[in-house]
Image (tube, rainbow, N blue to C red):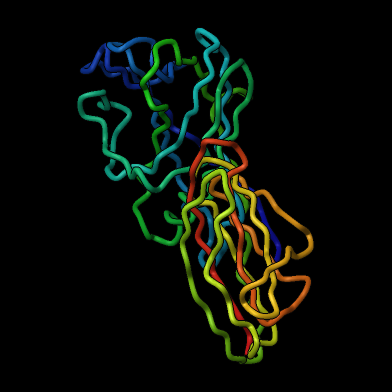
Length: 284
């Protein structure tokens, strides 16, 4: 599968709760985050993806911003959200800002100093490309609960430091695959700092089995495949464990093929919780 990258022009605009009716328009830099309870900033981004041909797969989409001023140097996590409604840079304000999908997000990043920050927004761009949701752009914000968690982002047009979207895509394969019978099941499981276990898989009548596992939360998760001869006693497969980043999708195939198997998962950081989705795909 070949791939190509595109770098569409990114339209960027700032809105502020301190000036809820002000139209900021194009600025050389924009604020993001919360200064205090009365002064909260958000940044909206919009970019076309119409140059991507039909029948492609979005391999990766990354939004890059440059933080040129880190405010009070108080670390804070920021998340991109897909927007539900259209907007125009000529009249957008805090009071008429569009709503956003709370569950369709990109990668969360902790901003704590002057630097480039890269947000993985592959899931959002894929939903736009597949027409699952309309491309109204996205909004980046933090939880807006703590004072001093604000930053200034460079938004100079046509600058090496201006916001940029990098999309990598490839053509879908035209190779014909010999038909075979596949069995597929899906399961979701909450995680915390202790290992939790998926349902037990009976693989006795299958030739191969593959598990795709997606981290649905904002915290890293450690997973491992476990095999069993009787569905009661389990041992760790090889490799013993793998860490899945927030919103990342991985695949895992058992090294040791046994009658029964399951997925064990826990959060990497104590006190955090998350959720995973598991796809079991077996060839009979």
